[in-house]
Image (tube, rainbow, N blue to C red; front, side):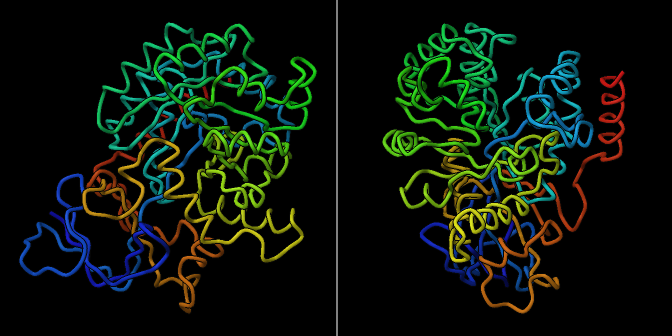
Length: 419
């Protein structure tokens, strides 16, 4: 049992109030919040006035794309994807996925991220990497015209939702522009069979939307609605070029808009209408996207970029309240990913927690802690990251992990893929 005491606690259960409660963790779960001298802890962690809060959840990423970090920069989306990324991906093996994902997990931990919604290939190796690292992963199928099959999609869905408590699986496909209408209909059939939500890249670029309208006479969102993808919810990754009708579909169906501000800015894809989404009550979460298009896996940078770009887009410095962005990065991400037992600090919830160091210059003086996390917080403030009740990162050290081997393995894979 672990006791966190003598600090500040942001539960995000009902709002943004900060208390001075103790939080006790027993096994993988939070067992007590308050003051209690009768319990006995195996370890007592003196927070020394620092902040204990729910961890960040990365609601859209491609972890194993660490191989292409700073490899194909300063290119538009389509040449970047088709000329640089796809040819390298064609050479990848399951073992590559394992090694490259282990590197991404380290970076997630330094940013206070304890779970990723990962859309990629070789799910067995991704699941194995997640379990070996003690990291929480929700996998999403990336089926398209070139990879995977409907049979595999259904097999993955059943296998990896009964694999390990750290691993789960969602139905999905890469995007409209890489997936035929016939294949999309088959995917919709699987979703209806399991009454399951579907997740996909959607409306990331203006040209993507224009191409879909040219092919089908409607936007990607309207096409997905017609096919029945959103009958049970789901999410559109990026959701940048959205019409008012698209937003109404999201609202009506409870679809999550997963915002990827860093990737969208770097690839000049555009700025998602987050303020309009907030005003409509649309579900919102945040993803980093992959380390080849971002290039960092840093939730602090994502939160700040969403806040800053929305103020520019709306020409209004009061636009997009920072507290709501913090909620997107934590509670929103967890619920989008189906991790309802990891969304906040409460008795019975999973102990996916972080400690932020407030004794750093960027956190002083203390006026408004929650807004300061969004506007001036950084990875230097992450003092501790706990997943499922286990501390994996503390005071700059990765607990029980051979970091140099992970670095060397990732470099070896990258060099081979570049040949």
